[in-house]
Length: 360
Ligand code: NAD
Image (cartoon, rainbow, N blue to C red; front, side, top):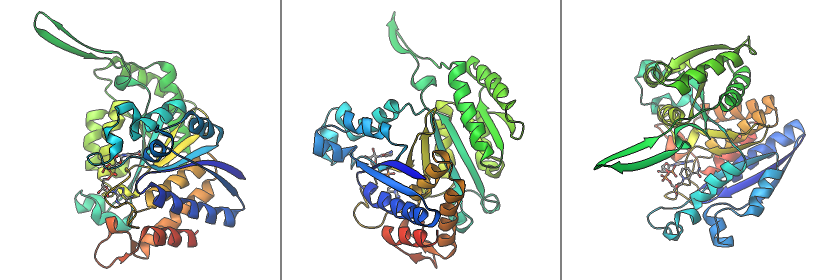
């Protein structure tokens, strides 16, 4: 297969970690007979420096023309970098919001996986952590409270602020279909999270999820109230496979889920639109504190590349090969500084990438 990938290395540790993900993809290409063509594009601070804006129309057009985008992260030190003296719409993060909108990315996927070898980093009680967990939070990204009509008014000395939470059946259906499709590639379970005891939008959410579920008889599904889900995530995270939810609930639950894994450097993510196209990036930021020092953990970005192989290219075996190579390297005791513990073998960003590539 020929895969055309737009590569946005970005700022800070972005170039270091994306280079390692490309190294691993090339190892996959050599072993399984695929060609990965990369077109490197600028976004964020490096684009401000080169072109005067964080994301040019030319970059957007090239990203749209690719099959998928593999991204590092963008931005710098928000206190000291000159990029943060610019007006908000000219800062690095404006590029991120614009590219997500331009590409119509409505489904955000964040896996939260606790590796057996790293369970000591998990802040949960040992008996819970020792059972491990492997879930995927699927968050709706373009609707709900963050995009509803809002206003603040003052009448007779009383100030009132209003936000509205709106969802259409179409918006719910398209993300529910994605969740069930992805559950079919995993352990075939969907937990749909809402607040249907209070909110109309959640009652519609439930109704549509039930309709979609009928088309996936192999997938078991359940509904869970968001307050209960927040508790279950720390009480028994092993019960979850795919967790499907709306924008704000997903924002909060995905951060909670990533926290219990114990390491930001291990967490991949994907944002998808209605086609097979996706943007794949690590969950963390550009880590300016360790940039350029060969200290960053490239695993989140390498695992994002594995998601790209599975979700955009349907190369499931190849994606599994990357995930297994990561597990192997961890089993052998190799660690970057962020996941280092006693007895581990400390390696830099490039060595970690090479070790994983060699085990494909
Ligand atoms: P951050 O995620 O960059 O860093 C938080 C901490 O985690 C730091 O100590 C950092 O060293 C560590 N860390 C992050 N990724 C790591 C990795 N792969 N390996 C080892 N350690 C890692 O968050 P921040 O400091 O709040 O933000 C820094 C910059 O990143 C800001 O400009 C912010 O706007 C930007 N940012 C970008 C994205 C994105 O591109 N999607 C996301 C979040 C933050």
